[in-house]
Amino acid sequence: MLLKQQAKQRRQERIRKKISGTPERPRLSVFRSLNNIYAQVIDDTKGVTLAAASTLDASFAEAKKNRGNVASAKKVGQLVAEKAKAAGITKVVFDRSGFRYHGSIKALADGAREAGLEL
Image (cartoon, rainbow, N blue to C red; front, side):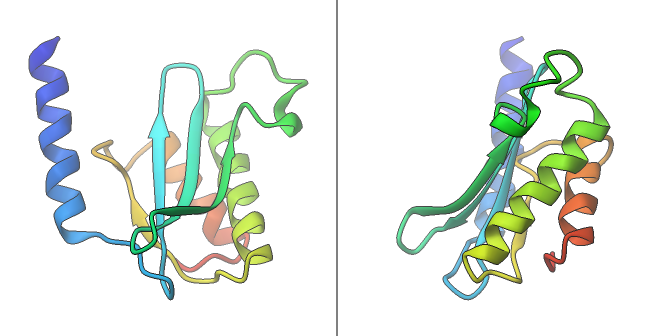
């Protein structure tokens, strides 16, 4: 188990060396657990979260189960894109945080694109 965590941490560090959020183009960071998915738009120069959404938000209260599936991830992508657009953000840099770009991570990115966010 420790080797998996170390490998994921190395992937995260490798990605974060290349990706950084600026005020003009903040970073859309994604975290996926077994039960939930989280997304936040971050300005790394100030160290401030500009917009955030997850399956724990009030709009997901009716769905107690299946919060970590692809459909929920797509809704989270759309929700974080709407919040980002309300904050005046249209372009972001996508940070997959060491997760493979498939399944729920891909669905979140697609949902954000459909809601008008440019990745």
